[in-house]
Amino acid sequence: MSKSKVNVPEAKAALNKFKMQAASEVGVNLKEGYNGDLTSKQAGSVGGQMVKKMVESYENNLKTNG
Image (cartoon, rainbow, N blue to C red):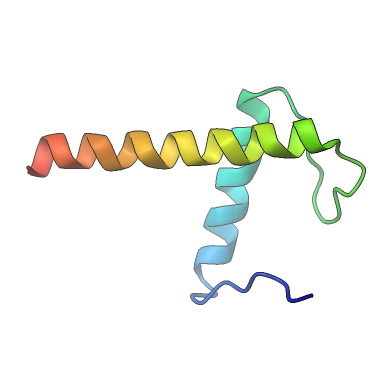
């Protein structure tokens, strides 16, 4: 099984910060490093919140630049 790889190393810290913010918004307590003790529901909530924020950002960008 392959791990996800960040193509732009400088983006890794920004992505991690984004993930932590999304987790905080949905009430999931993430820690630095391994978080394998999360339930599927918790992990899905974090991922879903990240996607929601990305879509909102894209839509806002379209409104201001479209």
